[in-house]
Image 1 (cartoon, rainbow, N blue to C red):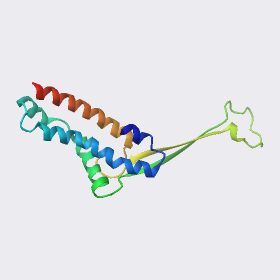
Image 2 (cartoon, one colour):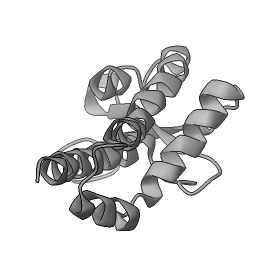
Image 3 (cartoon, helix red, strand yellow):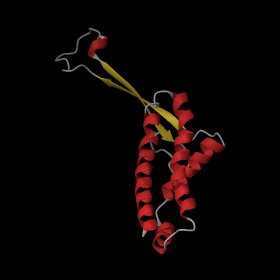
Length: 147
C-alpha cells in the first residue's frame, strides 16, 4: 500500500483517497498484536509490551481517526519547482533568450502532515519509518510470544 501511495503523490485526489486506508492498515498492526496476544502472553512479552516505544503508533492512530473517521484532511501538498540553468553556463551574458532545451524545469510534490505529533513531517518518509518500526515490533512480539 505504501508503494501505491508513493505512486499517487502527483494526483491529489488519488493520494487523499488512499491515505486513510494506508493509515488504517499501519495502525492495525499494533492493534492486532495487542488483541491477538491477549490470553497467551508470556511474562517476557507482557513486560516488553508495556514498555515498548509506541509513540509513533499513537500519532498514526490519531491521523487515521482524523482522516478516516472524521474525514479531516491532515496533509497538504507542497509543490517544488526547480530550474536547472544551461550547462555549461554561458561564458558571457547575452541578450539572446534561452530556449526551452537549454533550461530544465523539475516540478515535484511532497506531502506534509499538518497538526498532531507529526506536524510538518513529510508523509511518505514518516510512514516508511513507521513501517520499519512496526516490522521490528512484530518480529520481537512473535519471538516473545513463542518463548
